[in-house]
Each structure stands twice: as C-alpha cells, then as structure tokens.
Image 1 (spheres, rainbow, N blue to C red):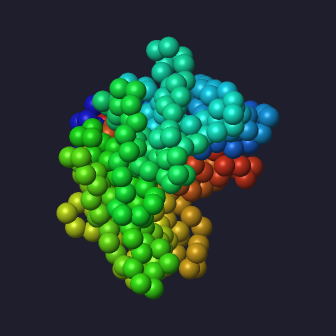
Image 2 (cartoon, rainbow, N blue to C red):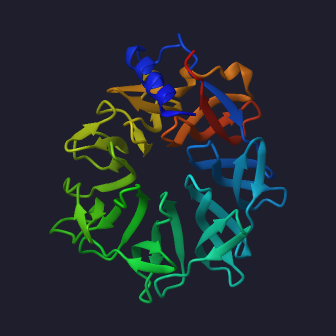
Length: 349
C-alpha cells in the first residue's frame, strides 16, 4: 500500500464523528492460533506481516509470524516458550524465548536463514527484546550480574546498557528509525514516596526524563515515531484514576477524560495512535474496546470494521499500527477465546 491512500484514510477519519458506525474503514482477519485456544498480536510492519505469541496444542506459547493467511511457529532457544514483540520492514523479528537452561533471553529471528539467534544478556540471567527498527537496531531490557534490570540497545552483535534515571531499573520499549529510544525507568525516591517510575527518551547518548509527574506514579512510554511518544501513566498526575493514555510531542495530550481508563500502545509517523479504552457509558469500568486516536478524536475501532463478517464479538485492544495503516491487536471471539486480529485499511476509491 502506498502512503497516499493512508493520507486519504486519515482525511476520512478527520471528518467522522467519534464512535461513528457510518463508515467501514478496515477489513478484519482472525489470525487464529497454533493449535491452542489463545493468540496475541504485538507488532506489524509496512507489508502487514504480524508477529506475536500463540498457544500450541500442548498449552505453551510460541512466537509466531503471520503472513498471507499462514501462522508460522518461530521456535525457541531450546526451551518451551517464546514470544515475538517486534518486526521491521525487512521481516527481522525480535522477542523473548526460553533457553535449554530455562532462562528467558532476547532473540533475533531471520527469515533469510530460518534461525533464531540468542542475543545474550548484560551479565545477568535474563533479557527480552521489545522492538527493532528498520536499521536493525534492537531495544529491550536485560539483567546485570547484580540482578538489576537495564534498558539495552543492541547493534552488530553487541548489547549496550542505556543506564537509568538514578534508580535500579530501566526498560526500553520502542525505537524509531531515527534511533530515538523510549521506555521507563526508576528515579530516586523522594521522602514519603513508595516509588516513582518515569518515562524516558534516549538520544545522542543520554537518557532524559520526560514525565516527572509526582509522587507514587508509574509512567510507561510504549511507542515512538516522528509524530511523538505514546504511552500510559498509572497514578494521579492529571487527576485520573489511571492507567490513562497519553501522547507527547512538545506538550502532553491526555487521551481520555479524567474518569476513563485507557492506554496508548503504539504510534505511527502520521500521529495515529492505538491502544484501548474502557466504555465509560456503561459504568466506571465498562467493557474494554480497542481504540485509535486520530486528529484529536479517540475512535472505537469496533465501529470502523464490520464485525459481523468475522468470528469476533469485540476488539479489546490494539497493540500496534504501521505507517501504512495496518493495525493489530486482540479481541474476543464468539466462543469467548482471545485471538489476535489484523485490520487492513480499505483503499480509497
């Protein structure tokens, strides 16, 4: 898909009212499972290739890649479990898998060779990869010999410790094609604080605190692009119950009304962000629905797709959106199972 249809798609969204049923903008695909009952989609690239985790007939989760109607088991590092969390436009896949020693390690999977590479750790006993950009740079978190967790960047076979904001913990969650990294990290607790975890942005060799929002707050940045940073906070910096989704691009945009519960999980370069929100019209903690934020409006994705053509009764969370408008996430099927979905934008006529 070219970028021109995506721009037309964004223009259509700009004139739709919130929660409108007037337009079907996506087709929907149930990605199925690997023989078990459950699957979760976690990332999608510009071609609509999807990765995530799915349950096998043996009741264990395996990393999968989905392309043109086929779900592929990517295997493990010698153990039973794996989960794929990121894919770039070159179809390089990253995630976490257990080793023969039953340790969780970050992996890089190459379709060119069909092999899964163990990326190692920062000297401790675990690591996990969260995302990969189109230059092949990978980010995630890994243990030090002390057991503390650190955000890492991985390039050319070397894992680099990105540091912290003064505490013991950090984890990187996303990286864009400008090699800007976001995540969350502990800051030193102030008197009277139980904890304070802030979102960070890492660029030009240093980590910067972008969410010093007060006492007893956990802030996670989960997506980054040229359009900004997306994430959620859990606490009371802006008067909400939390978690509450946000977008930051110079200034903070609070996605939900103060009483809502929401999260923004991914953002593309056009500023379209996806995540979930609770339906507050049915009570304080109503049913959860997959959402997309576009043009200052938060849309219920269930209203932009014909669910009657699928086995889904509700799309509950959107986890990623590509620059070409593909959206992935998870929903509830008619049998009550959780399955991964792919939404493909319908080209403008």
